[in-house]
Image 1 (cartoon, rainbow, N blue to C red):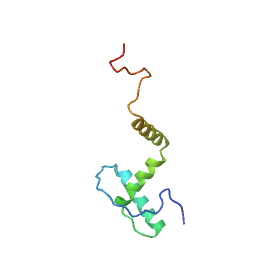
Image 2 (image 1 turned 180 degrees about the horizontal axis):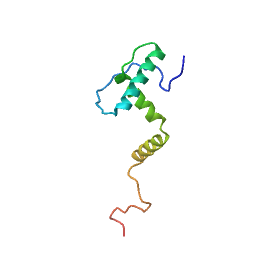
Image 3 (image 1 turned 30 degrees about the horizontal axis):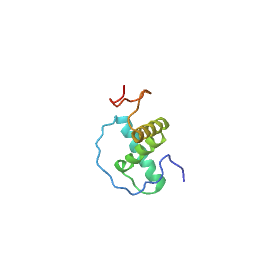
Image 4 (image 1 turned 120 degrees about the horizontal axis):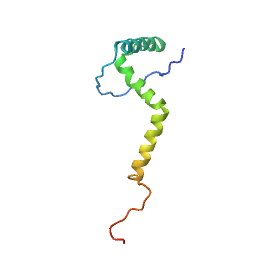
Length: 92
């Protein structure tokens, strides 16, 4: 069986999201869904496939992953400082 970038879909809960895409992109997405269905031997709707495609894209984007990790570290450590000591108003 050929390996597509996107593996067989798991069963998940979904939320509705409406988007507008160019016609040529829509046609390629539909083609991908058809090839996906043929590859795994079961029909899949593009609406069900797209969230997994987007998730796969985000997890494979290294720069996005780096920036997301940096933001997460900043949130855990508090607001960024500019290197100067913070004065509490009681000193000097």
